[in-house]
Length: 391
Image (tube, rainbow, N blue to C red; front, side):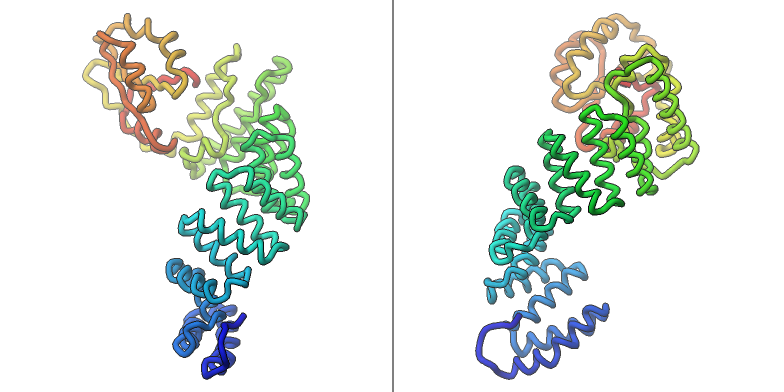
């Protein structure tokens, strides 16, 4: 790349300094490279190569505002160079300027229509804006240009899974893995798509392979163990799955791994939903499940209120009516001298539930935020007993 204009002193400075500066840059001698780029720009402020390379160096060293300014200057000087638009788009995306990033990526794919990476990045940015159909189209174009582009197939599969187009998602995950067999995230998300299709043997195998590839993600091991069918084929199948789960839980609990409970939902390692519909005694499983995470929290003594036991009743969004049908009569009749009840629920549910307990002494503890925030809200309350009907 080179800037416009007649030849002059800057040309010889750039020709002399830039090759050595680029060699320094590529060798990791960033201070030397930066000094040379700035020297060129002092003589020729519109030297496009120097602007671009300085911008890339600044991006590499975390100075993204300065990097964006230099790359934007380069784009203004040479709007015909697709690589400049591509690099500028990445910085715009980093700064959260997604609409501007989309336009820059569109310029990149117009000028470099065969650059699969530009189509992939355009698709990812469109997805962040919620423009899913356009994102899918861009990602399909990326994999048409490069059928072995595993990351683009993974991104495409994720969008298809989000749209509940599970057959297509599974196909794309498998194609991604054909190109990159050690792609742990693709194995894991393939497992999620297969589980949603009730293909639990295949899902369990995919989760197990993901966990094998990522020993630093112990919750993935848990996800493999909790891949249960909605309905069991037989009592024998249920018993076998329960044994496998109990063994996995005990291994994880005994290992006392560093776990982040806030990641539990994202990792999909929640207890099987059909636990509370089975006739089997699953208390040992629940106790082992709790033991996996017990060491992650401080060992605190419940606060208590004199002789009254403080009981928290967890109600999730959408289950208010079920809670009222199953618990309202009990709560209105139970002896208040022995127990203090608090309903723990999302903020919007408080008024809905409060109006159903007029004349009844019940407290409310609203929650908000992500799963980790909810956990911390409940932990700080230090109940003597926490009751959640789905557990």
